[in-house]
Image (tube, rainbow over all chains, first blue to last red; front, side):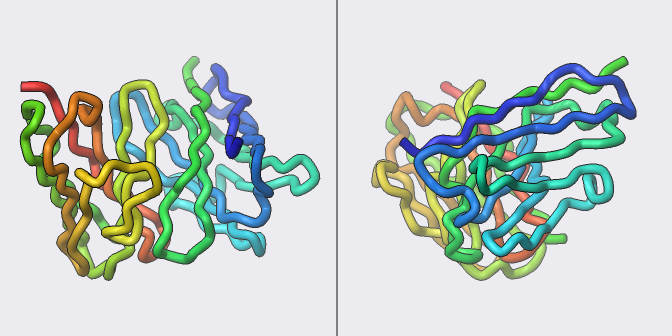
Length: 120
Length: 107
């Protein structure tokens, strides 16, 4: 079964750091384009970060310089290192797969999400 | 950045109704537009990619159309399981951007 499972969320103080993980099963993560998307409580979806099969990365302005996407091919896993966290980073964080067909595809597989709460 | 404006933001509808949701892009995005359904407490689900390509397993009552700056999602006959929030997303260029969502509520 094709599946993504996120972990690593939790409560962190402003200015702190967290690393989110996303383990893929049923497919080879490094062969696809992968994304992180978040959703603040009661709000809409916000795209954060992207990595393609070649390792090229794109980031949203809201997280550039603070969040870093990476992957571990051997562990078939995607990561989001989050530094300098702010209260407004409080959200459910999803990893999501794109098939890699270019701009014509959407995010066809999503994880269940992991919750990050930034509060003192 | 390309701004995506969805309308309406919410809609009170009944089972069997025909529903149309519009997404307007701040510049042409060709057909690089996806539609997602999100039920409460769940991850989004891809319904339609490339403006009109129905994903496998998605009922045919869902239809996407349009190109350029004005694109639409139509649900031909609303079913009870369709009450959810719908989002459009452009993949024309980075940063990817989502519309603000359209919540379908039971009348």
